[in-house]
Length: 373
Image 1 (tube, one colour):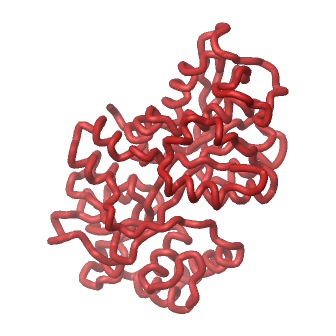
Image 2 (cartoon, helix red, strand yellow):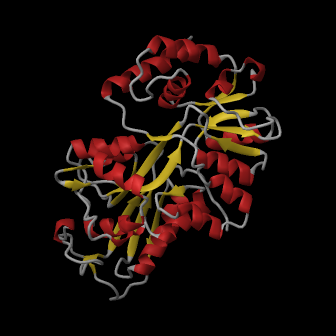
Image 3 (spheres, rainbow, N blue to C red):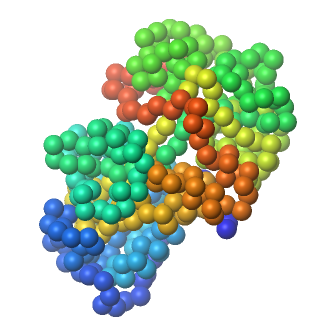
């Protein structure tokens, strides 16, 4: 099964389904999620508009969704490079029914009444979600009005991607990025919050609210001269590791997995003794969606076993499904790759929470100072 991408770039597409009377599709725009009384809903719209940056998953899951619910006859698909792009769209009249969001932007949507509460008690596939991600969802992405973002993709980052033919054993600490013997062979991910949080974990500080910004500045400036590159594109990191221009780098899990499978099997990854953070990419129905019931149905379908398979086959992404790693082991032809995908029970993984406005600003200022040094 061909994997087509890691993260999609901006693109748009239209899927035309087979017209017919199957399902409960309706052309009306007066349906509301709050009126759903059964699952699947007795009535739902005949169109859906999906925005997601996992574009391969988006394309395939939408086709399968329309097969499952033939009353949905048309789909409009789009993507984005930065969540700010979809956030700008939904602040006024828009045509988006389902968004692949991040935790930070889901909370922004909640704070500004831009997300629809979802009927999790009726959504059958929500039962598939691992308990730890349900707990995060129901505590962080919910209020007295309901739950607004349901977990789809889980990404541990930063992890240590490395060449196993260079190291005798997996690097055990983030101090590998400060190892002067590796000068010119290190990759750092060019995102301000990733740099800040890597430095915070390295120095034993809270990655969501560091106490010593001067120390972070000092160690990041020290680290800067050791890099082969600050990279922005994941394929760039994979190519540099595969060509041995670098032997270690800070990456997300799915980038390391793709590098192992498509560039060089010597590329592996590990979580160091300091632990790392996991991010949850969510499915959200924005307020003002033209087809909100179809959007809620798509959100439910994104938590199905079928979605687990598509996420892996298209994007090397790990689903929030409780059985995700076992499902991957069942469908993956390469048992070594399937085992590499599985999170180790000994790893210390903590939820990446949205940063406060103050910490976001200080992180931006820190990045500017380090890059200008």
